[in-house]
Image (cartoon, rainbow, N blue to C red; front, top):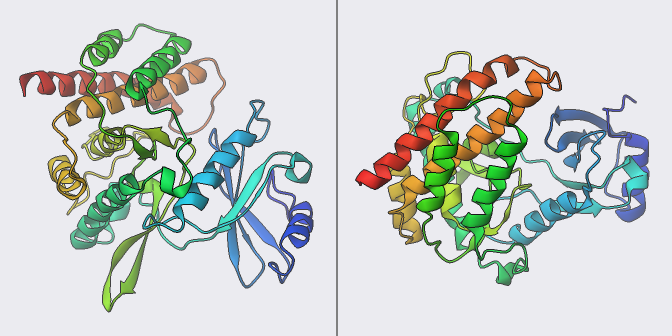
Length: 348
């Protein structure tokens, strides 16, 4: 039996046989689905059924039990609601099993569309349906009453935007290795124009097309593409729902950057434009979206800070891999987009 790094299948099986006797049948196989700075994700199967295992990265030195507990908690809370999430199987906080906390959930068949090229392969009609379903699923998430599903204490919504802005400002300060024209101006302008948040909701924190699984199936006799599962809940909290919408708008912008490791799907034929996405969200949620330019500018700022952090680590020789040498060129583009978007808010 070959063991993927970070997942000892013998220890994993012994634990599941103990806490969920009868769940596993045949010999186990496992493979790493994705790795990197984020949590590690594995597919595990016994020849009959398949599951997904999530654990912190190898060699991660921060306290991570909380991360696994949070992710498992939000999925378990949302599973009975209209929000499509994988069915949770178990949470293990005993680090002696795999060397770190982990949780197990059902395997969901579907495709995470990461590029415009991938979407182009399914055609404009299916692309349009998938992206509109992304908006509708976000409306469903933001309609969940946190207290009713046991998530009333899942975050601190008071002062959410101010804390977010300060947090990302500190992240920027920790990655300063070069002059970045306009970034302090963007940060300050966002602070001056801070909007009043609507009533807090569960916020995903990284909501985009490649963090959901899209699958083609038949419901009530109608065939179509549907969001089968929303994944990657590690940034989730209680806060301002329009931060999720701003991110969605940013990821729906066209970025003509050949060879860029950051991809948006906006160039795919049939992809609805950002205005239609915002209008659909507003109509279905009933929320005031008049300040959406602020939230979109904040999304550009946040991604600029994340990319600058990656670039900074790359310059120190701490990050290797294809595409990292291009990240530094992208940061000024994201800063400029943020400033332009805020200017639109003023002029609007």
